[in-house]
Length: 269
Image (cartoon, rainbow, N blue to C red; front, side):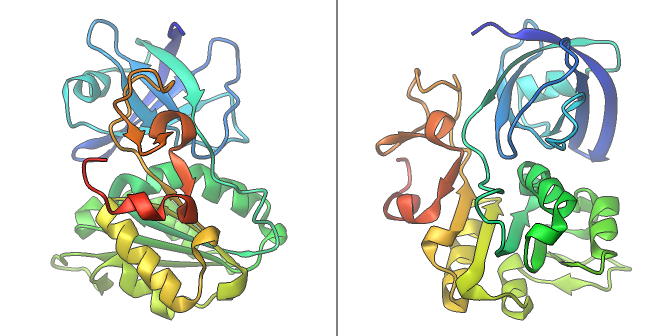
């Protein structure tokens, strides 16, 4: 599958090392499902798998939020409006947003893990009456590293949505929670037997989040986690992201937790 040339419409700095690219699809729209990812290719440098962070109901603008951590993402960081970038996708599985209608929905994100969850949050909030209680729990390392701060405040201002944010380390002027995001679960009210949980963030965060959700009464089959281990080709061909009998790029990145529990804590799998 060859990359298609997209044009950068907007560059937005989110954090010191995190930025958002808004791309214009050459066909006028780019349909995708919440949770899927694309391969982005700054020409002459290489490709990287990047989750889509935009609204599936606005396919006329393709949005990715990216942390600059290597040669490819640093090349993407140098792009500006009018530049071209190659795109292959969309790839992978999606958050089961439609399947959990009628249930309480708990989103738990850590760090830049809020970006892959954002499309699902958009969809649930756009169809708010179809869901029970909606809970968004977010953890960042410090107040300066809170992603989408304005959007979190906007969601928090809704009377029909519960939002709670915590940081690992406070800084002067921070009056909010301090501690790991799992501590927010015990005080977030939801009907556990009728709750679906969507998780994205560091794996250790997701491991303890699953334990906390289980303790609250949420079954593994109601928990969905986005795994983003070692994806490279996006089509299950190269084998870099093999995860037991699955490939993260092809069978994931969103997995129902009861289907991966036995493999989840195995390192180097």
